[in-house]
Length: 150
Image 1 (spheres, helix red, strand yellow):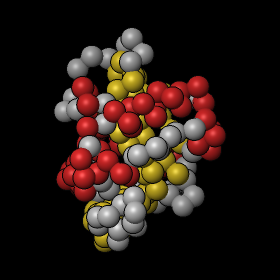
Image 2 (tube, helix red, strand yellow):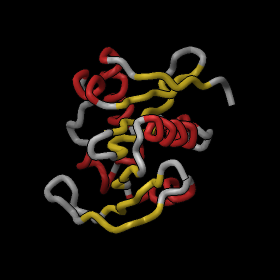
Image 3 (cartoon, helix red, strand yellow):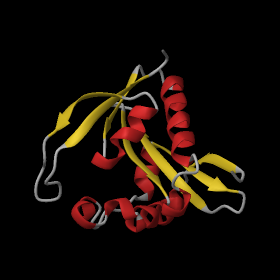
């Protein structure tokens, strides 16, 4: 795996993060409505713990956004071309470390249904299901929790 750096996202990275979300093949077809028109704004980056994985040339491979209060992994995306290369695992490991530094004891994840197995493979436990919220989300989503510092 080439060199990967995880760094804090800056307000100027907002368009790159938005583009990665909009280009995600995981949200095509039945799941497209959830990201339709979604944007990551500079104020969002400044307000939350947003970290990016970039390669040696600065190419964006993925990112996550941790909301500290209440503790929730709000966004986590890996570029299609970086899938299966350990980028997601690096990002989630980094996120749990940041959560521990912030004194959190758990982090909630409302998972994209196809991503549940990924989160569970990293230690998240399923604690329930989140009901649909039409019109954008017409399907149930797994609710998971990472226990921090165990």
